[in-house]
Length: 106
Image (cartoon, rainbow, N blue to C red):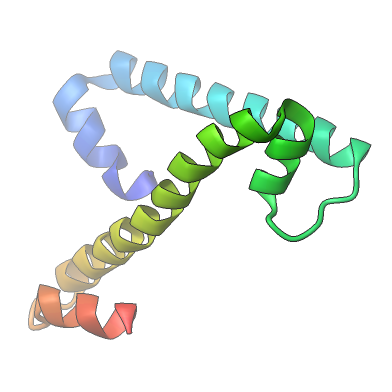
């Protein structure tokens, strides 16, 4: 999030940036509190967040949430790798962006 903070500030302005950060932080806070409340009620076994969701909300809801959760986590690896590679190329301009991506991913 903070790698793109300056870009967001330059495109939407200070007030809208603070609004975006406030909303994002609120969503993260409420999600963390909800997961904490669910996790303290039961023993969390293999499956992590999917296990907690499926046991507290039911198998159908757990499946509906678990599949997008899986894809989001799978895509986040690529996005984090690309963000890291972009920051490395900015620091060391002689590096090749696809090369850094390939090395970091492997």
